[in-house]
Image (cartoon, rainbow, N blue to C red; front, side):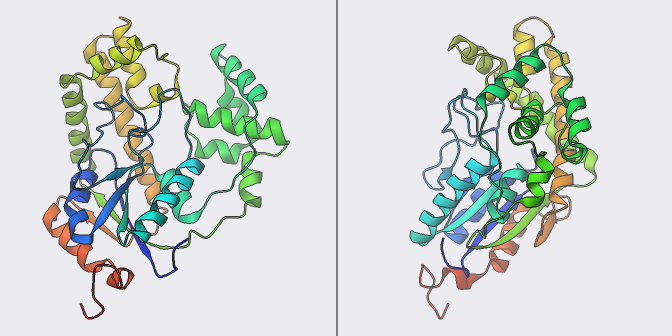
Amino acid sequence: MGENNQHILVLIGPTAIGKTSLALRLAPLLNAEIISADSRQIYKYLDIGTAKPPPDPAVPHHLVDFLEPTERFNAMRFAELARARIERLFAEKKVPMVVGGTGLYIKSLIQGIFKGAGANPKVRTELIARHSAGQDLYKELRSIDPRAAEKIHPHNYVRIQRALEVYYSTGKTLSNHWDEAEYFSPGFRTMIFGLTLTPRSELYRKAEERVDQMIRAGWAEEVRKLLARGYSPGCPAFEALGYREIVRYLQNQLNLEEVAQLIKTQTRNYIKRQYTFFKKMDVRAWYNLKEIDEEQIAFNINALFPRQTLRNNYYREDD
């Protein structure tokens, strides 16, 4: 894939920080197109609650709004599709700019990810049934594979089920598979830039204001339409942050104020997990939006991004 002197730009940061806005400012400077690394914006019809960017012919977004709500998606599949898109953008003499907050997606793209065991529908169906019956699968995972359990949130039922599925299908724990994995070389170089905001309370406030704005913009009506289309509250798309809480509101289990508070709490916890993941990444520079504005960040990144990767593209050798 590509040449080893070709670079992609990766822009990371917690939810609600303003990654999309900065990416749209950067794209024309670099002759870039955006590859979304957001595990929620992949789904069709989930627009308001995922803060999905509107279509922009001037700056194409890839891997957004392409998957049916009933379909499952994972980091391995993201890496496959993103690598194919990167290859095409290199061929078109453009810069791939990966933008998002789903750290596992980005890691799988730039470091590779082991393929592990294939799906086992029989085991998966049994695990889903046990979870629906109220069995504590996370406790079971902690007993079988404590190292994997440490990396999985107790409420991330999909990853818990997957870890147990791997164990019951192969006889090896997920962490054993990690140890034995052979990771591929991505075939390109990566330059990562991060956005942050301090104090953390300022970021939480910004994220909470966005939750309120989403609710005012019709998030509940968006979910109502999805249910009216026949999509079940248990389908994969509804695992996106906040959607199941909105379903509970529509089912008269919660009022809108309670829903907003629950989503805000989940959002704060998600931001904490994002920062924990980002700390392990090799970030070229972090930009604190409290200290530097978006225009200056775009100027700095544009200056730092390796121009030699663009030679023979739209820059001349003597530029």
